[in-house]
Length: 452
Ligand SMILES: *Cc1c(COP(=O)(O)O)cnc(C)c1O
Image 1 (cartoon, helix red, strand yellow):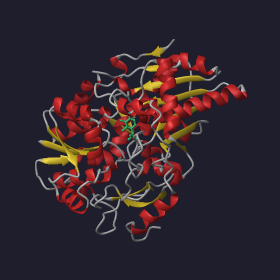
Image 2 (tube, helix red, strand yellow; image 1 turned 30 degrees about the vertical axis):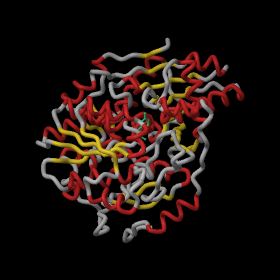
Image 3 (cartoon, rainbow, N blue to C red; image 1 turned 60 degrees about the vertical axis):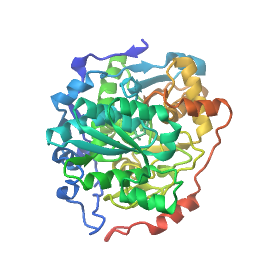
Image 4 (cartoon, rainbow, N blue to C red; image 1 turned 90 degrees about the horizontal axis):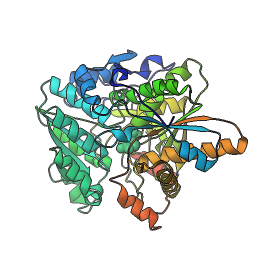
């Protein structure tokens, strides 16, 4: 078979919370002013109670509201493909499976959490959501989810992407969202950056500061984050829960699970349900793949840092390049956040997962090869996972050992054709983020009492 499909009946009824199974403590988020562990009420200006509860819970299974499952049914369960043509082209004995999250209307996995977040906000009487977006996938997912639950949506879009990806903006506007380039004159955080550098290209960290300030300043408004936080990773576990059932249909179980890592949500979504088995003793490799140009896991420092540039968010213990990180302008491959989710970071720190950093030209080369075999043009982010899946398949050919490889095809690349154009014209360059920059940026990192 080439694709393994589940029926709407097989759609998971609950999300899987890996916190329940961790054999070690997850360092708590800290209040930026007091340096004490964050209390649920500290988060109340930004998030509805249901999501705060999901953020902090240690329950293993969290029921998915029926209203959320109803929207999921529009595109879920997503297909699991066996990449047979790619296997043949590589001449590998490995069996390569990919879970295709690009099947969602917004084109990526991000809708899985956007729909849940919009629902729980609406249920508590919120009228308006703010958020940031980089390449635009998260902004479009939230824009669609807000349209479905009749919420206003304001998106602060990193300025360089706003100008490079006009069609992402039009997509968000089609779903009814208001989109402004960040830094914007609409917030204090934005005005401060503009005063210092009117030509600032913006960054995710700056856009988060703007969206948080906007939400904290209005009673009818909350803030929505597309990755990093526990509740976001939780919502994404439908991916791995479905993939497990689909691999059962195929009569297989992965030797290795691979996904790209930005903030960590598509990785967690696919990997956590499988890591549950690993935590119970199953032999399994799990690999997170990040860009050489933004290597938070492989070259970042594991420490408490802010989630944004202005230092308004709680402090999270995570692998970070420093919250003042500005991604290099030549980098087209997505995945440009300075940190990685605390959950993914703690798993890496404890040796339960591996990480690799890949240069963008090799990533696009793999993307093009995949597209020519399997048809789907992958998002540059997803192509990081493809690159490593292909490397392992070639290794399997060389050692003659059969391997079952599963990776997350987190989205399609139809809005990333500008980056493909640059690659095909030979204009993309590799860039390795220097370790000295990390040390420099972390000199002014926040100090949290009683922690290293
Ligand atoms: C946003 C995005 C990512 C990276 O974000 P995570 O939170 O790490 O999942 C990966 N792939 C696609 C297609 C995305 O849109």
